[in-house]
Image (cartoon, rainbow, N blue to C red):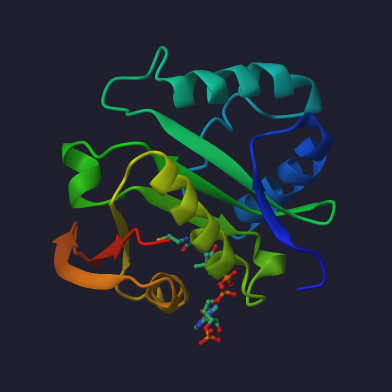
Length: 176
Ligand SMILES: CC(C)(COP(=O)(O)OP(=O)(O)OC[C@H]1O[C@@H](n2cnc3c(N)ncnc32)[C@H](O)[C@@H]1OP(=O)(O)O)[C@@H](O)C(=O)NCCC(=O)NCCS
């Protein structure tokens, strides 16, 4: 990695790059939930979007069934290459599927080790939140994500079927 990958809070300086990445996700037909994108269609919406992200991490005006969460943008040099979302605690649904951390890397930036590094840095953030054991889940067929989790010390807890799809539930003990 020429430039170091960093996890940053949403920042207007990188907003255009972030929007570009989201466009890539839409183009690949990604179904991964991208929090707040309903508010963030162009650069001029950044303040509104950012207010929502600030409120979400402070637990202000959360939608029903949501827990406080922090969205990080992954940046390498001047480019946004991914996003990582940390749920500050589990609720009934997240405990089954979803877990503490979700992540995605821009299609054009995959297979460069970015997700592995993002999860490593994300785990440090969960430690700061007092999470001792992080739950990370993925589809059984998502080989890349499974590798990312296992390379970060993930231990398979169990497998469950949700709407016909086999999901893996991994736990990572926060020893960092
Ligand atoms: C899963 C995802 C985040 C991986 O991102 P990435 O930056 O490419 O991952 P890394 O480069 O850190 O690669 C991790 C491992 O997976 C492997 N890998 C990456 N893409 C792969 C693929 N399509 N098929 C098989 N293995 C793959 C890498 O080779 C690497 O393994 P290695 O260390 O043995 O070589 C990315 O594919 C993605 O954003 N997918 C869509 C969203 C998603 O699935 N998010 C996770 C939800 S649980």
